Image 1: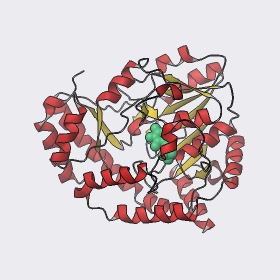
Image 2: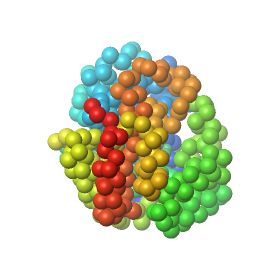
Image 3: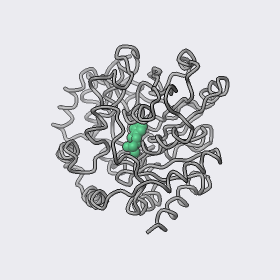
Image 4: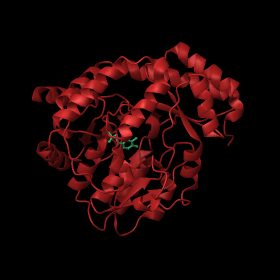
Length: 388
Ligand SMILES: *Cc1c(COP(=O)(O)O)cnc(C)c1O
């Protein structure tokens, strides 16, 4: 069984043009982030800069270690951290900048690394959306000292849930491998449940999308299924007691399967995305751009609507798959932002986007024909899109 994890690491290393000993595996991506921060010695009194458009598990990991997340607004064109606003947030306590590849759109890492170098800070790539993409010809996740990836249901490829870390620095990589070796195994029940969910998912009929999503969220809320976040992680940033777990062999097996078809799936995503881009352009909207420096993975295709609730209702009536991702600057938190050191009202771009954003699917379950049906739906309701 252990052999599956070695095989999985080998396949990952090959895909990322890395060495096996640069990689460590975790139960989830967030556990990988926690491990990187800990290995970097981040703790009490330290500050970590993060984009104000992220998943709550990112500030959680920082706070679990006694450090403080410091937010920086994003730019509307990239959905990523606004590099021109990073320096004003740097203090004597700042230790790390975390930048993200939101929706699989690369951040401008040369700029971020230059700022970090000037102030002697570490850079971590939140590559949970970016596996398979490139920044200036370099694989996403190799542009900073360390990167963490996720293979949760919605990420570039899926092992149900899962995470990994890639380090460019040998000393850090060794520390992480040691930490990986000390992790507790996920429980028998958790692994069984995950295995069952993986089976159910693989047989799910796409036309049942809306019913399935609602059922899954309800079960996940009450911790009946292995959802990506447990209720307690969303209630307050307090380290859950069984947080630090390793990757199970069943996830490694799933990962190997997923990697074997990854390239064709990525090509598919980019084809579907280009259809959406052309359709939006024809309607006079640009919601996603690919700068010369990047080859995006586009795991979700973002667009903005005036009234999200109304648009979601329309989509459900027409059985159109839509994702409501990043509905809050620290998704999916809707209240008590101060617990995460987030001052609501301070990050106008992130807040506006999170109030109006929706996402179109690009995954392999969306055929060209289905994409065309989605586009017809978008064209019919283009009066709903947010201008500017
Ligand atoms: C999904 C996600 C994570 C965490 O990944 P998990 O594997 O679910 O822990 C971190 N950051 C962002 C931006 C994410 O979307």
